[in-house]
Picture 1 (spheres, helix red, strand yellow):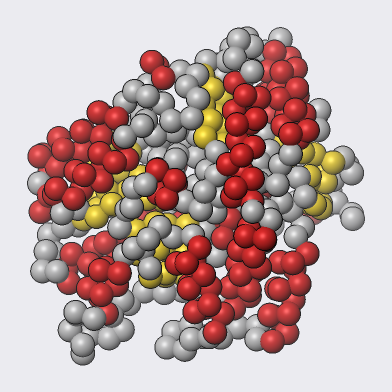
Picture 2 (cartoon, helix red, strand yellow; picture 1 turned 120 degrees about the vertical axis):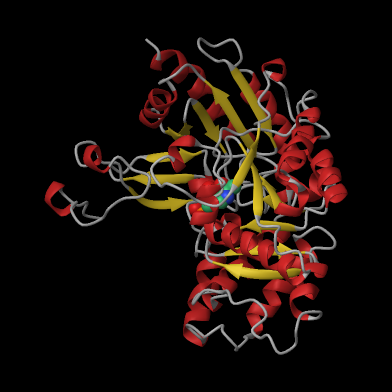
Length: 435
Ligand SMILES: Cc1ncc(COP(=O)(O)O)c(C=O)c1O
């Protein structure tokens, strides 16, 4: 494959990329299979990030490609406004049966995590209007949260860099993040910090529940640096939301579809929110698609108890909602997850993963290591994570710097030998990057 030269790297304004610098130090991927990406220079690179937290079944899955091809030939597209198609219903049923926790049995399709988040926020606001409580419009989010890049998600972002250039957004208050120094190097769920959830009561006392539509959190935070919730924290948020009649939204765009060793983090920890936002692993990253899971009562409030003449009940949707090609990709992906028991595999091998990543404790500069399911975050001194990532790339392994944290989320097909390679590479790269 011919790579573009500097003159040909003009028109593409690249996302979340230092565009000016890219041309002088371009990095290209040209192919992908299984656990590996192929770089522009032909090198095979072990992918510890499943693309961008999304290719959970590994790269280049033929079953998905075949399903997409067949669907394109059968029906490339169908208007989803006022028309349905069989695969949309089939996929929604499968998601309710196999992925969503019990009680979340309605699915609204989107094309990305950002769209799933904005969809859930709009559902929350309209829900309270329909209930005659239209003053409930504000949201509570959390410091270090990432909820995508659309207006709702940006307003609720807890990462300064992602919001500071864009001015006023939605009204929001922020809970503290749950990274506590006393939990440093905890394995799995940290023991201390469930009481941080009580801050929600303080925010409610200040704002008043009559003004708050929903609380949104990543139950297992990814982009903020793999922040694992303290034991009991999510349960407490649920209790406080219930006490005050506030909706709870879990943003599981990263966590769902096996990443935490179960279909969802909600299911894994036994806390059922009112809505869950998902995307990424839904189609194994192969075709853009997202899905919001909602409680029946929310759907009923819109569809079965609202004013019957006010239709459509929810004036919201995308040209590509439930795109038939995306549905075909998702159904093939769910088959792979099930047939290969990938969520169970992720759960089992997460023990070896945990031991591997925690063996890096004691390396120079390593300030904290966190893990859960097939996720890990390694905190390093300021400015070092990017250098470590550059070094591992030289050595044949790609890891992702997120601020001062190295984050990893390998495909769920990972085997012990891959974990050994990742750990050995970091063992060498972390000190080398600080010399
Ligand atoms: C928790 C969370 N929410 C939302 C998003 C946004 O998803 P997308 O990039 O598909 O819009 C992401 C992306 O990483 C995410 O991690």
